[in-house]
Image (tube, rainbow, N blue to C red; front, side):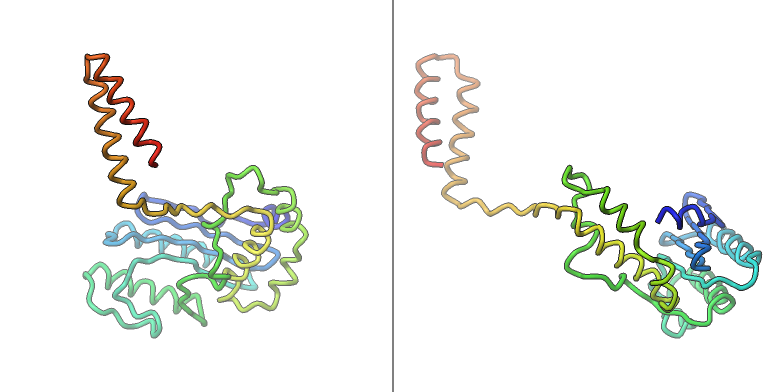
Length: 230
């Protein structure tokens, strides 16, 4: 991974507080990875300049043209991505920006696919891992990521599967050396136990407002008897 980092060029990193884009050229793989986010109800004035800049960056790439992988969240639910043509409803701005994306895709890709989630083990995700734990073995994680032959393993992977392959490989390695998060499950409290806890709470409140020592001792005795039932 360090080898990749030193040979990875940031082609574009842009944010206008609405649309964000990051384009990286991973030289050993001759691969351009683009991550782009467009929020819902985005204005044309914020979206179009980003696409224009990204287009210009790709135009300036030298031959042979790298493979392009785009990991995006367009928030355009009205678009039928399967045929890259159909827009079902939506605002005029949605339609305009969808058309802009269609033209961009036609220009730079000859193979498109929509992947909702990476094809990794559905039973464990990065969110299930506890990276704050002292038990994380960062040394072994770094060692395995460094030793993995990314260039050879990724050489024959189809372009539309490269991203999910990188994620799946990284997750497989990290999972071996990172503990899972503890489940935040709380068993339901039985009704009779709740009733006792409610009585105890009321007694504590009365004790705090009681100025009579004998009364306080009497109520404290009741609290202790209730706690024995819990």
